[in-house]
Image 1 (cartoon, rainbow, N blue to C red):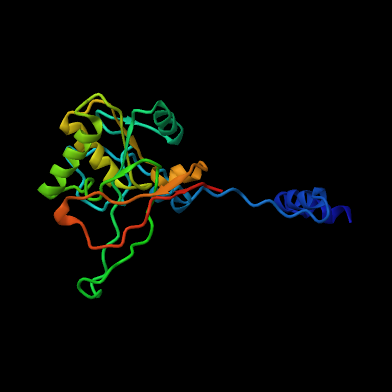
Image 2 (cartoon, rainbow, N blue to C red):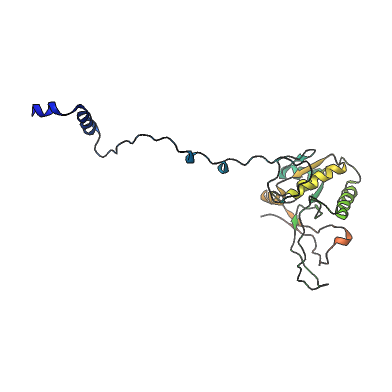
Length: 226
C-alpha cells in the first residue's frame, strides 16, 4: 500500500486533495469568463439625448420630443401657472388643435364637437402653434394677444397645449417674435395640469370668422378634478 501511494502522480494527488477538502454538496467553482460585448448597455437603453431648439419653428411631428427650454421664455410648471392666475393679470392661451368636422356629414348639418377641457379662463386659439401658420390665423393670433394684453408687451402670457407637443412651443416662440417680453411656456400641458388635481373648464375655440366651423356651441362649464 505504501508503494502505491508513492507512484501516484503529483497532479493527481493535488486533485484528490481538492476533492477531499470540498464540502459535501458544494458546487464546483467555474472560472470567471470575460463579459461579452453583447452584455454591455446598448445605446437604446441609455437616456435619450436632449432635444436642441430649432432655429425657427418646428415643422415636423408635433408629438415628437420637445426641448427643455425656449429662448426668450420661462418654462413653468402647474404650480407656477396657478400662482400667475392668482396674481390676476396673466393671459392663458391654449393652442391645442380643434376637432375637425366629419367629412361625411351632410352640408349644413349641425355638428356637436366633443368638449375640450382646458385651464379655466384660457383663450383657445387652434392653429396658432403650427410650424407654418396661414396668414389669417397669424393675424388673428396677434390681434387676440393685443386685445387681451391691451397692447402691453410686458403682460404675462402662459401658452400651453398637451404634454410632448410642439404646438405650444411654436406659439410661445411666435408670441416672443411679436414683441412680448413676459412669455411662459407650460410644456406639461393640460395633462400636467389635471395630474395636479386642478380644475378644468370646457373651452370654445376662437378663430378668424372665415375659419369658424358650423357647430352647435356648448356652454363653458368648469369641472373640478377628483
